[in-house]
Amino acid sequence: MNSRIPEVDQNLCVGCGFCAEAAPNTFALDREKLALVLNPGGDPEEAVARAIAECPVAAISWQE
Image (cartoon, rainbow, N blue to C red; front, side, top):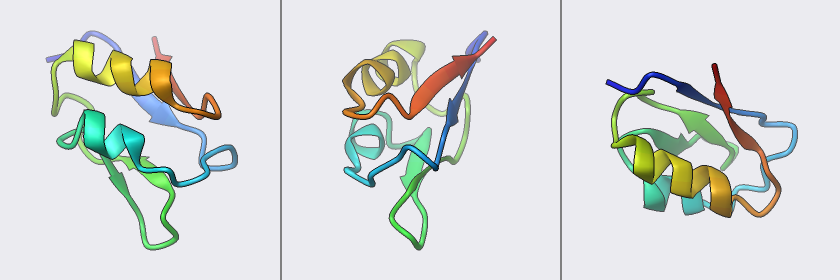
């Protein structure tokens, strides 16, 4: 299980879906096509870190 928990700021999210591609067991898009955390420990921390780093609007961060 990850020691840190990812969180999504849906006010910033533009719904590109990259996070759900990079870490599909952690992130999903809701009915409004905005990212949400489906399962915080669903993917290896490296996959979640990639989703965070590549989010075009910095809508995902670690909750320590």
